[in-house]
Length: 226
Image 1 (cartoon, one colour):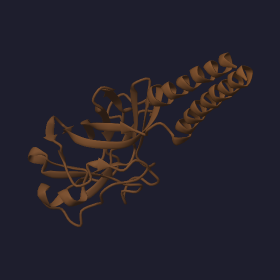
Image 2 (tube, rainbow, N blue to C red):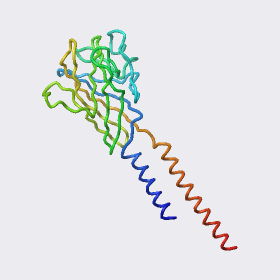
Image 3 (tube, rainbow, N blue to C red):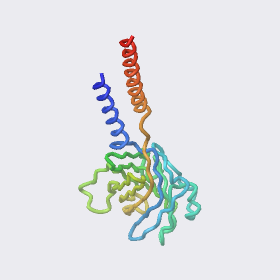
Image 4 (cartoon, rainbow, N blue to C red):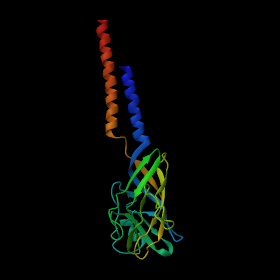
């Protein structure tokens, strides 16, 4: 019986380790900064009202009209003053109204300390126009595209403090800026979903089983002494 309990305990420990370390779903993704570059012009991203992004959803919206960086804060994930290119903003959307539809919701995963992200809904609002410039870590690069290509998201992740970086190229498709390649480098903080309640219940059940076994053994000892 002791061997069975010990084996179950080791199995439970393995489950806890696997769910907490080897693979975990993100439940929080906060953008703290970064840069946007196009044609050699670099702008610094500033966190806005929706910088703590919704996992499994979309954040922010297209501003009602072209304005200043300050006027974009309330509707955006991040804003920037893009040098001679003027002010711009970022939000996420299933449809940007012009170039893309059915972009998946923001999601992410950490497996063996490697962060993967799906920011396919990443949308740039610039000069009164919304253009999707998103990507994902799972994107497969087009071997026939030699320049001006959307690239997969490449990330770094620090398991000690939850910080991350992510970078990718996002191609503008259509409109007056057709063919422009935007280069993104973002920084942020990420946290993962806690160990599922079912796992904790399983562990509690093991503890209870051990307790019952000890109680039964104690009763048997008392009966033998009598």
